[in-house]
Image (cartoon, rainbow, N blue to C red):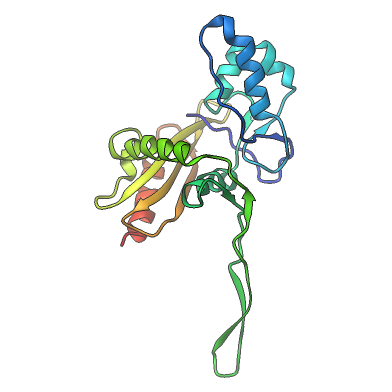
Length: 219
């Protein structure tokens, strides 16, 4: 999977939930393009962002295919991708990201008193069914146990995760991704690592980093 990195303040069209895209042969390519566009086009401030005109997808079969697996016309930020993984622990809804958990005052005796606390808030409700979530968890858990995400595997934990690499436009550097959700054996956190470095080095860095975080969250 290749994920082009975008800044969190990028504005553009964004993804929403829609019907599954089916492609069965060249005769269905136009239909697939229309269905994919219905999936991709809609409200701002959701998961992945389109950057060019919609006609690019309609008229370019290769670009359509590239977009389907995370390249092409898609941009995603680390915050957006982490938010997307929150569907696994929230019954199919994506939770709104926030930075500040709470603010507190300290009295003369050094005791802390919470003044305000951020309450969890749903960003996008019911974007995935329970069946879809279960299917994804099964696939992503296999990825960590036995496939490209094995470098993040921790014995005694069940983790659903996926790695990715994004091109930067040169032949020297790349962007490495690893997103994971702890199903069992630790606190139910989403963990995301995003590395920017020399080609061939980001893989070792992202695996070592996320494994260390998973171990820190282990029961």
